[in-house]
Image 1: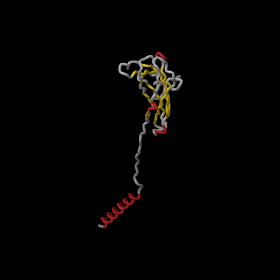
Image 2: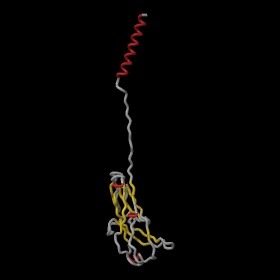
Image 3: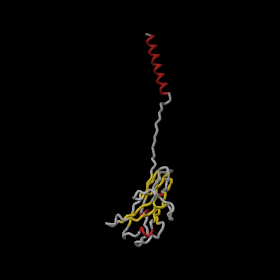
Length: 183
């Protein structure tokens, strides 16, 4: 019987010691991460100032103003390089567009024009830019998406073809240019 009491006492001491060791050991640890993917992005901002309004001319007279311009801005993610191309509605990649008459019965009559990066019209602005090559477009680097961090661009347009181009029916001639930002 004495042996039984000693065995029970030894067992109690052993279990008590184990409990003490478990509470005195270092805590168990683990880890996890928190992550967020921020995608690069760009937006184009246009206003009425983006529209290029060429001076009115009499029929059959060459447009005499050069370098009429419009401006637009681009916001891209901070430090994101981008390339801007301009595409007239006729999908010409060299910036050579055509304005169409707006009056019923005159919508097939057109006047050609050229988009340019400078007022003199010596550097065309077309649509061969890609996400890695400026082509015949312009380039920039994003400063962020806040309005004050926008990059400004000016596009110029000139009627091509001289007096022959404007020897058409009196009307308002118009074309829509698409601004493509590649990033």
